[in-house]
Image (cartoon, rainbow over all chains, first blue to last red; front, side, top):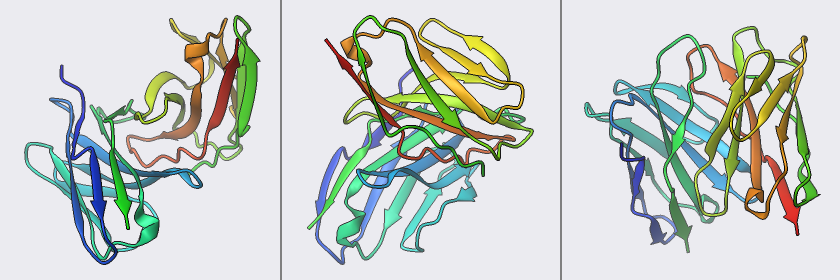
Length: 115
Length: 110
């Protein structure tokens, strides 16, 4: 099976712009989660989607949003970019089976730099 | 969500066994304990998961005491390629909202 793919791999934006990142999960996986990773804060949970519905959300401002399509592909959007949004954004998919924590399979990430 | 505490960094020589302990005092009944490994510029990779007692796979062992308030990841005979950040996380109940934290940076020394 192909792994989780994320596009683009690298992105440079300026403050105030918006950005959309894309994630294609492993075939058959219905749960997609997004994380932000920075050197100082580690890996922080953004949100999780399952069957096109946002099921969980981390503590990020409303500028961070996402969605999931019927084919389980997901996008996340960051509006009005700030310098502090520079980070590695990771997407993870999971074959949610209910009842217990399910292993997450991570993509390579999108490196976003905000100038 | 159960908060986890683990050492920020550890050093070990090649060939030694490495034990990384994680504290999770507020673990819930339906929470599982999962460890991930992350190399630079890559996403984390699942290593091992457990609920109680001991779990072993081809790369690691996970020891969980009866009270489940901590867990220890054991890496036998580490090599330079085991240099990475190791994350302990606690979650479950069918949901994916888990906290990774900063992890433990393991440096294997030749």
